[in-house]
Length: 193
Image (tube, rainbow, N blue to C red):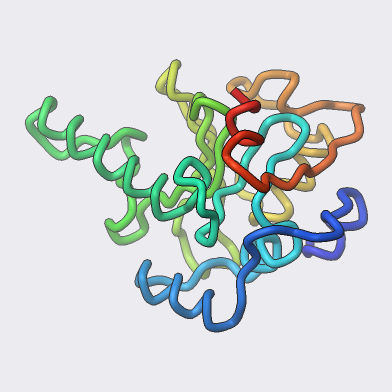
């Protein structure tokens, strides 16, 4: 599964917003201290900032909106996890038994549904191109592991091929045509909630 196969079923915007550049991606990866999956970078470069018609957002390190910016959301997860560890008085994680980034092999968020009810994490297992996706339901405190690369997971999810106990039927869309909508300003983002 590649970005070209994904663009075949899901047209990218004519004018994507907040896309990356080779220098920009280098800075992002240096800041994170890790190499991101090439297909994720290709997705951001092709689609930019936006959401799918089923409400799923893919975090973008170049987004100005803090609710979509990969670094801002990552910081939010790290802070929440620290608070939980203090309350639990021990090494506990939001997505127990997994640790969060920056722990070696820790979970790194790549997207969510509105209001962060469902968060999608990469499980840094092996090379970046082979990272699995963890689907975590905040309200239920439960997760699922999907051993698909980033674009393969999106392809299956948007094509209604993922049967999940945690994702709502509206998220998987089954037989509906999914579209990608660029988010150009904060008003467009707030209308998702």
